[in-house]
Length: 331
Ligand code: NAD
Image 1 (cartoon, rainbow, N blue to C red):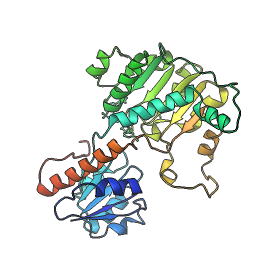
Image 2 (cartoon, rainbow, N blue to C red):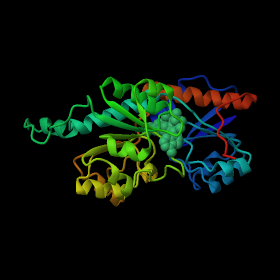
Image 3 (cartoon, rainbow, N blue to C red):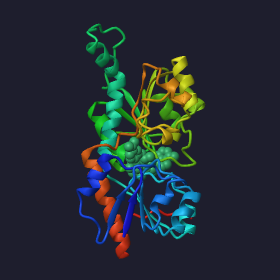
Image 4 (cartoon, rainbow, N blue to C red):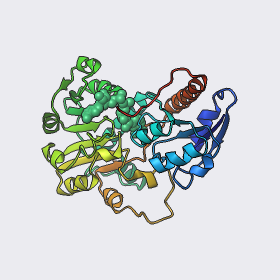
């Protein structure tokens, strides 16, 4: 069984090669992203292992199915990037890694909050230049601040636990409230009320037609002046030009992003030798109160190990006809 991995970095190869291969498996690591042009690299491979910015639209799936692929093993939790109806029509089975390390993403969310609040990037640059002045570095206590959590599944719940430890008041919105989060003292309430009462809003819901551009000019307007927005979930939850306007007017006080709507052609690549072609991202990068990381919230040793072991377990189970973490198109 040939398994072709797309979008692989050194850390992916190390984590997969550190584990036992499924019986009879051959690993082929490809660095390029999966696209309609690179799908040919999977010709003859029964299994394609794909990551978040791989193109799994119908034309790519058509090509994979035509050259012998039968399983798409996603090494991600999110599956908004695959055309599940096309996969079903083509008889392609799709698996994912529903949970690998919610703590990894929750802890990165905290890193963004603290770095923004305490101006760590400015302070780091200043002290390295021998500038020990504290002008503009005033932060705020997290204790007693109100944090709005949108999506309280595994990551939102891990985030809630940590913020409760900081002494924050927790507000939450989720169509399916999580008793663990309620037990931490969180108050579930409608989105509008969350936006107007929270000083920090953090997104932990999946990207779907319902949540596309959940943060837009109207919802930003409902947020308190000077509040903080954090998105470690999916880029398209946020209408970026609307956020830029809110930053320019000072209505939005801080922005921390680990994901960006147009990240597919940028993130995971070293583009430092080239002019940045994305004017929206370029504008975002000019604000002193914005921190952007390039989809690295998942990147801990523990998460990489869990991603690799669950992905390989999914492949072995599929090959044996046993239950695995299937993703299916909604009826
Ligand atoms: P999960 O399925 O455990 O939780 C998602 C929660 O969102 C569920 O409780 C669900 O009811 C809720 N939800 C669904 N629709 C909603 C809506 N319209 N409004 C509010 N809540 C809604 O998923 P998880 O493991 O906690 O992951 C959450 C998201 O984090 C994933 O969908 C993925 O996009 C993102 N993620 C990012 C990274 C990263 O590296 N930055 C890594 C993993 C996951």
